[in-house]
Image 1 (cartoon, rainbow, N blue to C red):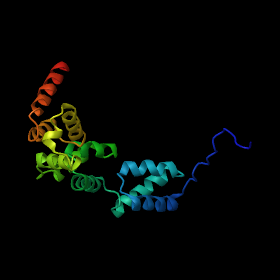
Image 2: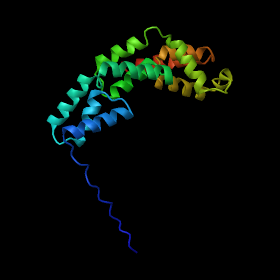
Image 3: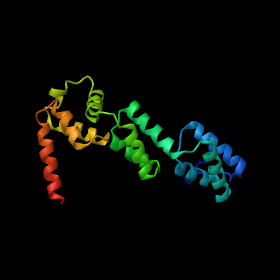
Length: 187
């Protein structure tokens, strides 16, 4: 029969010296941007030593290839313009990408400074449910709850989500009551 049930053996990746590690870092950055901590973690997996990682990161910082403030602002801008996400989602995603909390907050505030969150939420809702007659679709409480959860997951505040949903459904006021009851039970 010739087949074995044992998993294939994997050889660990070769450990890279500083010069090869720099090439690896530049190649990684050419594919997509990384926060400094993300890049450091990635490099540590392949590095021959922590000193080599530190030297490469310092060099990349000096060249301007690693800058968390610029990364956070660029990331926030792309999420706002490209995906239409709300500020809370962008902040959550930046934290997941290992950007320092204060730096992420500053970037999100700067990018969303002139944005109308309600207009963004309305655009998001219309895009996600295009082709549907929203007043008719949202008349079903299950669909209304699903739309609310979708807006919240996309990073819009509860109050803004409810305000946008009220434009299409009279049942949206019940979401606010449900939210108030839930917060009363958890205090």
